[in-house]
Image (cartoon, rainbow, N blue to C red; front, side):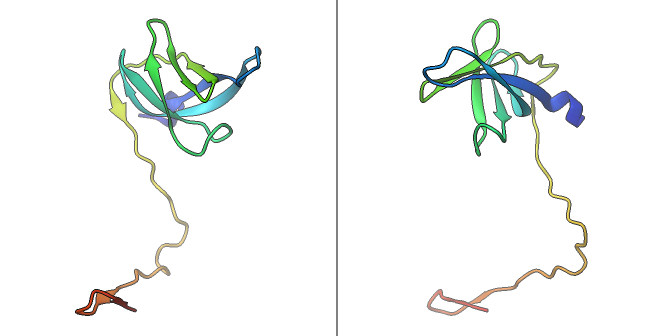
Length: 105
């Protein structure tokens, strides 16, 4: 899938507030009429799982309400890949073990 198909927006209502803020999100995993998992850099450092609620995907964590409208074409799980600029200069580190289990560099 293209990255543009994975992008969506979430409505985030902090605990004790009435107005929702919108944040850009990236859908990492989606299963139709079950749940989606999104990554939102501005809200949390870990993926958020939103459950299907008959009309949209939603979750409540620590009193914060998160909702998202997303149309799923098919079930998928996306993987992230890191692209490194110059991989030829990086060498992998080889570690051998002693009989006691302690590593030797």
